[in-house]
Image 1: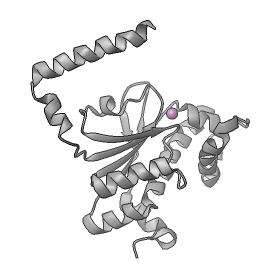
Image 2: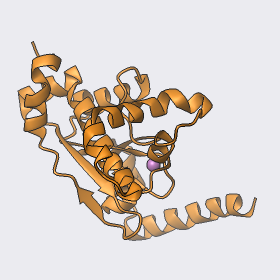
Image 3: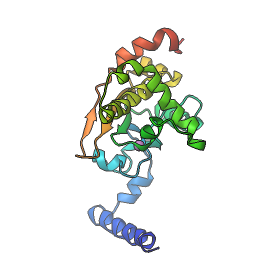
Image 4: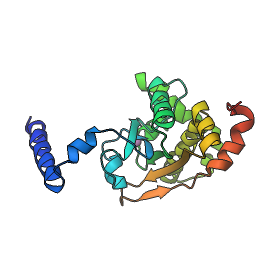
Length: 211
Ligand code: CO
């Protein structure tokens, strides 16, 4: 219970520090949000979006789940993306994975993981799609890292399959989709340089929903 109680003491200290910097801080915060970023990341406790990006409350609309997946039938993720794109008009959508991801590790094991099976199946599908490349990597740790990257790239592709994303991009040139990996060992964000236009072009024959 000690750490639990400590949270409220921490909160009061944080409020005092914010008010010390700017007596109107919370009045401004309460007025509304106009974030430029939608961040889709892993639920892992070691990857806090605002902290690693050095941004403040109000700067990032955040969605997190196990292994940063964008699943077509996930009403939660789809609603977050729709709201961020259509209503908040975010300029950038970031899918951020991380090396050492337990979800991706779980999907690499031939094991029944109960209720998690359906979720992790999405990552097994990523493996199947990129099996040829992955099977050529002999070192298991390197293969694991590459699957984490490929999973991010596939989830970026899934974002680009969404009608509202395609339509808004066609109309305004935004949102732009990015794929990153956070490296727990050194704290750096790695930009996978996902080519938004190339990916969109690559999938548009089958997934174009703008007409
Ligand atoms: Co993870």
